Image (cartoon, rainbow, N blue to C red):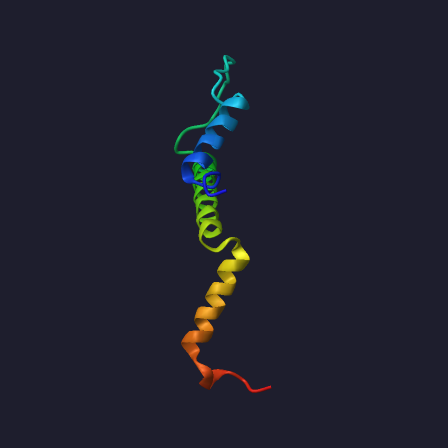
Length: 93
């Protein structure tokens, strides 16, 4: 199971899926770009969204590799906070 979750296996699966989906095939249709420039705010926002999406995906992959799930991260952070505050701040109900 560890071999299936290794970074090399995950990368290989991503490349295989990209190639299988036809992402590497060249498309020979001509597109006319009217009024779009690199300095266009829409294209800058689209690029920013793509970068943020990639960073979010990477962060979630690291969280899952370390804690198993985002809920595992929250449990870890809560346990650290409880340990840092100590018993003097806990309510006695």
